[in-house]
Structure formats: structure tokens, C-alpha cells
Length: 382
Image (cartoon, rainbow, N blue to C red; front, side, top):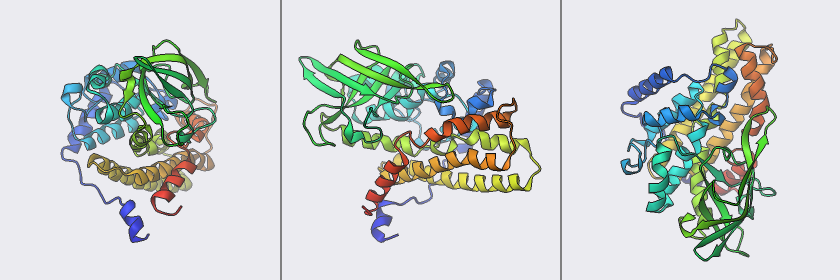
């Protein structure tokens, strides 16, 4: 790596968090009182599994909006404490999907770019685990190419008229509000003329239709806007600043522990099975070593975010490597374990579920090709 590359991509070891053991014990006590699903298949990819009662209980315990100011319902805790909480929840297979996007992205973006009125209206309910958000990015014909967004917001007296369609919108069917990237200036360059809007999902003109995945689950949706009218104060941040804002937001999405723990339930179940097979023992050792390396990369990236840096390249690297690990893990287990995928044992159920859903992991938050393009550009290789 050249000196120029090293100045762009740098993940020095992050310091330990004071009081980390107490934070972990607090989360584990909460999980003992509010146990994750007994069904192992629902502990797999748990940040896509919703339980609104669990989210409300988590909010009441002060474990959502942890880093937000107290004035907006938050708890003003250090960012790395929040990382520890997420790590514990995901490792346990907790059903966190209902509040996940609001806590991870929407709330922090409103704190950075939103108006005071937007913060007062939305953040306390999000921190309480009672208001849920979705992100309107991907579109038909655009996919991960955000610069190809065609859904548009047109200025009208007193506000904006919105028309278009969003696709693969996680959790839109249960969300109260969408943070949408829309083209607000016709005829502008691809990355210009984009703005972000905070749109209540009960606004007339919005239609949400389910997208059922191969496993029969309903997480994704397509959302249609037909002459949907929103007020002036729906605009988040500066008009035409959407591209800059959303790229900063995606660093939050791409580098967290969810990028390497989606398949963790299978690894834990494999270890608990205590199979007396040298090939299984060797596989467990290899997977655990790789998992710990990814954890260190993610932890260091989180520390840079907490320090006010914008580690776009590092976040993309964590997502790419983490997705690769998550997708390889079920295939590696299947290669050495004779599990009954149609049976009722925990290992077989976990493995069957992951073999179905893991191909989609590299699509969330940008495809592998997009991530590697970002890394290459960031390092000056293209």
C-alpha cells in the first residue's frame, strides 16, 4: 500500500471502552427477561426479524437512541457503548428489525441535517421504540446506482409534489416515516439535483406493496408515490444536497456488526452441537478466527465514526468482507455437516434458512461491485 493509500484507508486498533463489561451485563440481563425467539430460524439474520413489543421494551430500557441528546429522548451515551449493545443483541439473535433503521440511520441523519421541528417530532418516538423508519433509495432500473434515481419532487405552493417508485424498501409496511432520496431539479447532472425528504407513510398518495422473498418472508416492499403532497418542512438538509448527505448516511449502514453477524446463529448452533468430527472442529476454528478479524475491522471503523471521521472506504471494506463471510458460512457448514434441511433439529433449520436468505446479504446497502468500486476510487486505483 502506498503512502497515499494509507492516508485514505487506515484502521488503527481502537481503545477499549471503559465500563464495557457492565454494558454487556446490562444487555444480557435484558435478554434474559426478554428472550430472543426460540425458533433458531428466526435468530438467523435477526436484524430483519421484527417484534414491535421487543422494540418497545428495548426503548423503555434506554437501549435505543443511546447516543442521541436527552432533549430528543436519547441518553447521551458514548457511541462505542451503542456498538456493544448492538453486538450483544445480534449475537443473541434478538428481533430488532422494527426499530433498526430509525436507530441506525434516520435518527443520526436528522441530528446532523434535520430541522429542530423534525427532531422534536420524530426522535423521541424513535428512541422509545415506538416510531419506525424506512429508507427510500433503490428504484426499478437503478438498483444500487443511486445517481440513477428518477423519482421526483416538484415544488408547488406550500410544499412538494412527489411521484415515482421505490423498490426493495425494507420495513416500509410497518414504518411510520420514510427518508427518501428524490430528484428535485429536472435536467441536472446525475449526482446533482438530489434531495432528501422525510415523508410520513400515512400521507395520501402512498401505496405500499409487499415483495415476498424465496423463504416466504415479507421484509421488502415496493412503494409508489402518486401526486403525493408534502409540506415545505419535509425537506431534510439543503435542497440539492441529497447526494452528499446520503453518502455520509451509508457509512453508518455499511460498517456495523450486522455486516458480519447475520449468520452468527448458525455458527453458534454448530458449536453447541458438539460434533465429534475433526473437519467440523477445523472449520469452527477457521470461522471464529475470521469472525474476530472482521469484528476488529468493524470496531475500528465505528471508533473512527465516533471520533467524527467519515471512513467511507473503511466502511465499504467492512461491508464487502463481512458480506463475503456471511454468505460463505452456510456453504462451508453444508460442505462438512450432513444436516437434515427438512428436519426439526436446530442446526438443520438454521442452515436451511441461511441457504435461502444469504444470497441477498450482499445486496443490502449496495452490491459487492458498488463497494469495490468505492474502495478502488477511494484508494486512487480508478
